[in-house]
Image 1 (spheres, rainbow, N blue to C red):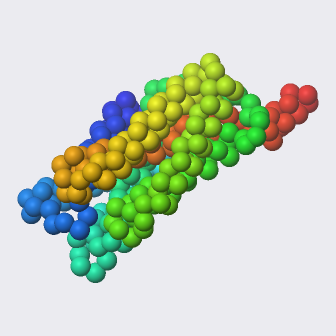
Image 2: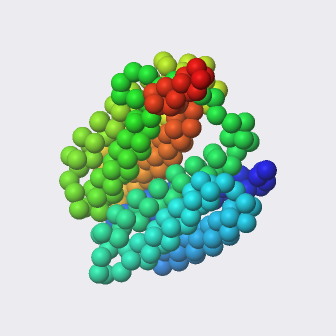
Image 3: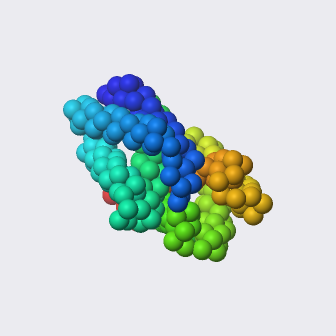
Length: 277
């Protein structure tokens, strides 16, 4: 039986990582942040990394299931890679590439911690509530496809922010990703309207996605009216980046729940065959 404190620790790390994302998003690429601001961000990053090492050690020592331990190792790998990218982003050699990697990995770390918080929760211990996958595309395939699309969209946004890409790919990607999230959420709500975990997760993702689209439009309007260093632009862009992290985390959470609760057609046929024999 897992300790509830393991779940609470995961939530704490997720909250701290989101605060670090917000803090990093307030720095305008191409400008030099104040030394004390940079030092504080680095110190907070090192602290989060140390806490992550302790959390993974606790997760392994607690004798958790292999899948959960593997998720813990994934979290640790992302944290290390993000730390390396963060240090490289302030070097003169590869600031643009490292900045893109740092932005993407930070949001992936937050999403991974939300995943850990989900699988260590009391609700997870109640077990799955199996439902059948029907229609096209299948829910289980959407559960893989959608998070990958969101990650790609985050990469496009980070590329534009670092001036490695134009705005057009990010805008076109936003429309396509929003459509996929809308379809996935509606499919879940229509096919499983009373499911105790899928229904609230789909409604949450739908709300988060709409809010993210609104933040993106607001950031775009503000950038067209003022300089990148203007306070209104910095704040709205930072809010949009933070919204991207929350969108990815919510998408990952719904995908995990779909993969856990929704049976594929092959699995359904195996269950029926077993019942007949």
